[in-house]
Structures are given as C-alpha cells and as structure tokens.
Length: 366
Ligand code: Q9C
Ligand code: ZN
Image (tube, rainbow, N blue to C red; front, side, top):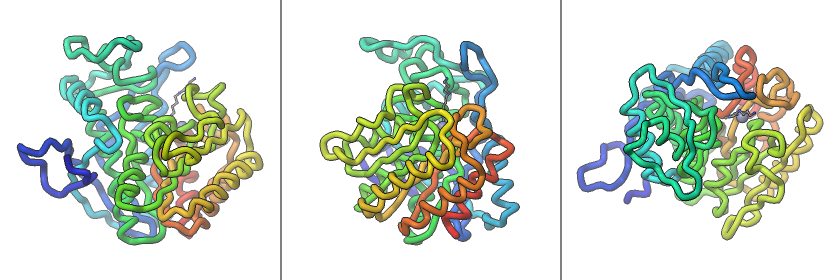
C-alpha cells in the first residue's frame, strides 16, 4: 500500500491503495485558501436535539457566508482548480471508507438518513440490513445525517485540508485555510459523529508528520475534537484543545484534563475544559497556557481546528467570545511564528460566521 496521501494518477488494477478523486479550488493570495464545490452535495435536513428533530445547524450557507466575507475583504484571488486522488487510509479504516461510500451510492438523491439502532459491543455491520441500520455501525449519535452526496462532500472536505497543508508546506511560511465542510474533528478511525465524517484535520497533520515535520494541532472549536484526539493519541503529534467541559457538553465521553496521550504519545495531549459562560478573560488565559506548551514543542507546522462556535451568539456553543476575541486568537496563533494551517470546523451563528472566521485569518496572517 502506498503511504502517499495524494497522487496525480488514478490507482491501477493491481494497486490495493484506496484513492478517491476530488476536485478543489486553490486561491493563492496572502492566505492560501482551498475549497471544494462538492460541499454542496451534503445538506443535512434534521438532527435530534433535546428530544426533538430540529433543522440541521451544519448547513451549506455557512461556507457561502464565509466565502462572501473573504471576497468583501479581498482575501481571495482567482482560484485554480486542481484534481487530486486522495488516500484517506492514514486516518480511516479501509472498511469504514468503503462502507460509507457504498451506502451513499445506494441512496436516492432525496434520502436523508439518521441512524436509529446501534450494534453494541458484539455486533458488526451487516450488508443485508437496511442502510439506516448499517449506519448505526458507523456512527455514534443522531446529529450526523447521511444523504447520497455525503461521502463525496466529506472526501472533498478532507481533500481541502490535505491540499492546503501541501501548498502551505511548499510555500514554507504564512497561513493556509481549508474553507471546508462538512467539518472534521469529531470523525474517528471508523466512525462519524458531531456532523463529521472524514477527519481532514488529523489526516493533514498525520501526513505532514509522516513527511518528517514536527506538527502541533490546536483545536479551538467549542467542542472537544474527540476524533482528532483518538487518531493522534499514540503519536508524538502534539494535540491541544480548549473546549466546553465534556461533563455537560458534546462529545461527553472525551475531552477531560486527565487524557494525556499513551505510549509514544504520552505527554502530547493537552485538554483544557472550561465551564459554560466562559468569557474573553477565561478563554484567553486557557489559550495562553496552550500556546506556551506549543512554543515549548517548537513545531514546524501548526494545524488549527478552527471552530467559531465559541462566539457569544452561537446557538449551540455556551461560551461568550466576541468578534474582537477572534482577532486576538488569530494574532496569538500567528505569533507562534510557524506556518499555520486553519481547517474549518464548527460555528453556527450564520450571520456572524464570516466576520468571526475572517477576523481570525486576517489577524493570523497580518
Ligand atoms: N445536546 C461541530 O461543531 N450537538 N460539531 C450536540 C447535545 C452536536 C458539533 C447537542 C454538536 C456537534 C463540528
Ligand atoms: Zn463545535
């Protein structure tokens, strides 16, 4: 099997490599920005919240609004389109990728499925089951719906992160931004959850590490990046996260301060859970602590899981950051002095999402 994460030619018959084609748009201005039109193929309709089905928070308009704000601030230049073959198996099991691909291929365009039955410890995916039941074996919650375009959209999203990383490493300095959805950081080796299917953030970090770079991941999304943490737990890629206390916040089952990594990765996992209502002051103090650890690690590349659901107006996050705090976050990360790849994660206050994200990127690159 090839260890390359991207390739330019399709796999041949005797390759057992799992490469999937995706097309991305690359804008090479001051900030390298990579997006994929395929995100439009995934639009969840409903999710299960407080005992009710409610309209999905994670919606295509999120990206459209960030894109619009970037254009208004002249942060984008005319993009070049690039077609790459991407191999997800550095981060995901072959069987997970193939199962999701197969299920999506068999759905009708307007089918939207949420899992409703989970296999438990002894069960496994069985292809004779209805697709909604098979999804239970690949998922961990009822927020993460599947439609016919979900696989293609999430491969495109991961592709944005990997290509942005490669372009940034080639330039050797500054900032890159994967303007991608669906988001990444909750997806694990063989499961989807928290609106995430493929973990492009972890894949980009692992791929850069495999090429010899020292890599630190900083997760500033409101929710703990459980998928990324799990994927990096035994590795010396530094993973640091500031997030809502999982005692009361999704993903509940990880994100605690005593999770410090294992084996080779022991000491390379730093969680800072914070209570509901955390404001500018509490947040900055926590992020300063994380940045001191990152400095001490001396990374060649910083990968940021960029969620802006820490915003005071966010409908699901419970922190109280202001637009000015996002500029501060960008500036503080930019001052590390290493090249920074930002990968888009959460943020659901759609009228302010463009402003908040652009504030981070502008301050980091400025
Ligand atoms: N009461 C991201 O921000 N909702 N995912 C949990 C529990 C799911 C968030 C509600 C939150 C997933 C990428
Ligand atoms: Zn989030």
